Image (cartoon, rainbow, N blue to C red; front, side):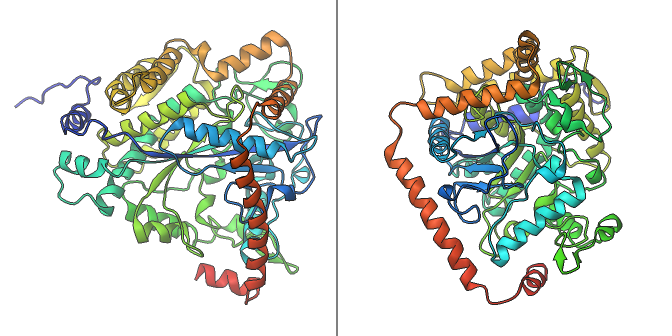
Length: 530
């Protein structure tokens, strides 16, 4: 009996699942997912040099403040929002948070782009400090290890992380669609891992639509091999690049090229990640762990801890005190996903906008509902190659991607994906006459049809028209953003006071943690990894 030919443009599994949700008499079944943002920015001086000052005490303790912390460097501020059901509430909170921070930065600025500038050596990048507690020392030593392994400059790249969990009322409906009786932890984790596999398949679309790092400064390339072209003064670029941040010049570090983490199941993911933090690696052994009484890294294994694994998206669960991420996942399953492939948007003062957040929410649902077969070992190389191609050449009108062994024009594949999202956006718009999700989808569809509308193209066009270097452009934009936040009318006094109270509380909390330590750091580390 001949095998029926099914059009590549029709995903019948997806259509059936979407129809199942539509016909479930739960019109708001996709509405109400929780979303949060973590936004990184380098602190720089008024002339664009990386700040060498400590994390401002007026912003509280970077160890314990729930809203304002640091990432890799003492100069790399990370702003963390709670989760919200509505994107506009999330954006308002992030705006208020920026207002508060800027009131305590003096003459300093928050760098408006993902890629750093005016940094000529690792020595100029101060490692983040978290106090003298054991947990604070561990965070600092981990960062020292990252510097030894990959170089500090890579760690100074900024990004935006988008955290998302589906509404709880979706799971019983989706379980019925899948003809499953139990919609609990096991089912939910399986579905989140289906999403993760599909993000590996289709996440290149996010780089195309939202990538905003097509160029870098001279200083970023010192001592590094690259294929970029000279652009304007002191600036290099790839003509069709979308996100050099997510290329092999950025987070897709060649030293992790051989690291394999399965996303076929929660058990396999935990197994692989746990193995990598226990397997010694000769190049890291040569660095040394504790040399002349001072730690250089937490250990000499392939990964020091789970967070060292760089990926476009992660399965997450809120951890308990002293608990490792893999232990949390094993305890309670996947609670949410963290999308890590977003550049800071230079055109938005808070680094993101509502249309982007709404599209991402709909894209998460697309990845959840589409058929998601297990990935074979060799598939990772193919899918990574697609992401890297889009990072370097995403706006190339002739670019083709590998789609199950067949080279497919990016534009055709992208249009198929955004067309599939129409029904999802209609469901997310339930009860809202303004149809914001449909509007967000229309905006992104326009970018697929016209690459000059993408943020990366707008950045290149802006530099071409102004003749500015990347550094001058970023510094000017950073100053504009600072003025925007300081000049905002009628700040939310209640929220600003809450931020101030949190800073005071966080300083006291850090002192309490330091006073409560009962063992030395060596013993603490041994216990943590046992």
